[in-house]
Image (cartoon, rainbow, N blue to C red; front, side, top):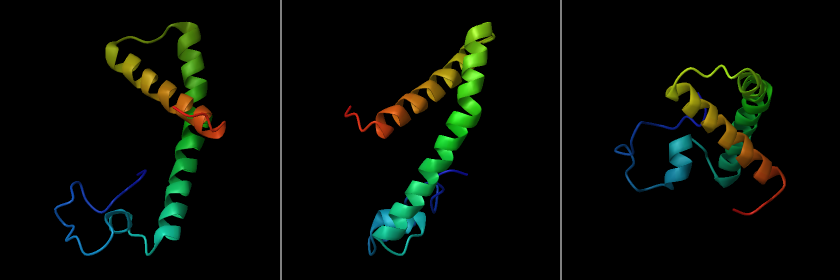
Amino acid sequence: ELYRNKGKDFSWWDGKEKLSLAAFGAADQKELEYYLKVQRERVKYIAYEYAEPLLSFFSAHKLLKNRKEEQLMFRWERILAEFEKYQTKQPE
């Protein structure tokens, strides 16, 4: 599971420690940054190795059958676009 945190909501948080550290089980800011970097790389791998080829195939062959499939395709297109912006350091 990507970006797995401590719970489905934040009812467990008592406010004593930094929420971002507690949510992802990180001991400090460096560990949190490393965890988030690893997760980002996992998403990137899935996006480029699996989603992008499928998006190209489905687009070329017009195989989308319903709105749900179109929404999923659009979501992955947006993820890929965000990675492109991130890699080229383009602002919003």
